[in-house]
Image 1 (cartoon, rainbow, N blue to C red):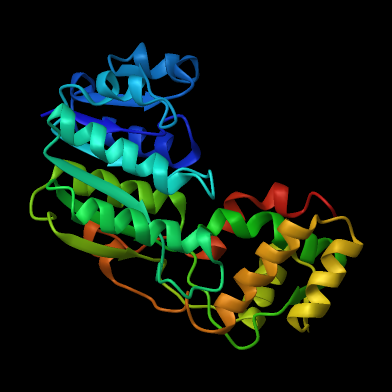
Image 2 (cartoon, rainbow, N blue to C red):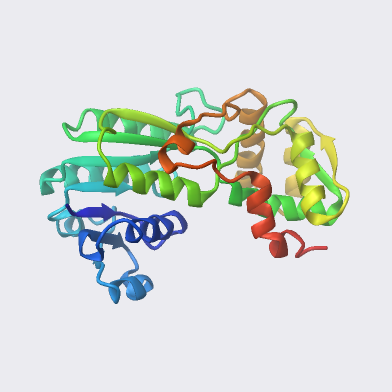
Length: 292
C-alpha cells in the first residue's frame, strides 16, 4: 500500500512522515512538498519525495500517482486554500487514490468568529464528502505549540492580556496530531469518519496563566480586556490590523465556546494519553523564557 503525505516539509507533515516510518517500509511512503530539497534526508532513507504545488495543477497528477491513501494537510493560504484543497482532492481522485484523510479545524461552521480561517475548512469538508473518495476528517484542535510565543510574551511581561473571558481552550500537540494521522493512514475502519483530535484538558485563561507560571518560575497575571481594547493594545505595540483582528477573533471564539470540548478520540487512536500543554511548554522552555 502506498501512503502519500502532502505538505510533508511543514511542521505537521514532517512529524507524520516520522510516525509513518516507525510503522511501515519507507518504500510505501510518498512525501509531497513544494520544497523537495528539505526532505533529502528522508529520501536517503528510501522514501519517495515528489514536487507538488496546490497552485500548480499540472504538478498534482504526478504528486498523487500510484497512491492508495493520502493525507491532505491543509495549507496556510487563507483566502486561497479552499481552491487549493479542491485542486488537490480532484487530482487525488483522478490519480486513483482510494482514501483521502484531511486535517481540518474545530467547528468549521459558517458563523465562526475567526471567519475564513474556519469556514474554508468547512468548504473543503463539503468538497471531500462529495468527491466520491473514501474520506476521513481530522479536526485538529489548536496546536499547543502555538501557545509558546504568546506565552513567552506573558511570561516576559508578567501579564496575560486576553479577551477570552471564561472560555476554555483544549490545546493538542502537533506530535499527537501526527500520530493520529499516521494511525488513520495505516489502519482500517476510518472511512466516513470525522474525528475531533484534542488534548486531554480544557484550560481557562487563569489555568493557562498558572501553567505558564509553573513552567517558567515567574508570576503571570491574567488581565481581562474587551475586544476593542485588546485590538487597540496589539496595534499600539506593533501588530498590523489584520494580525490584531485575527488574535481578537480567536479570543472571541474561545470565549464563545468554539474550542472548549475535550474528545477522547486522540487517545483511542494513538494508544496513550495525549500530551498536556504543560508537557509542550516544558519541551519548549528555552523559547518560553527567551524574553525574560
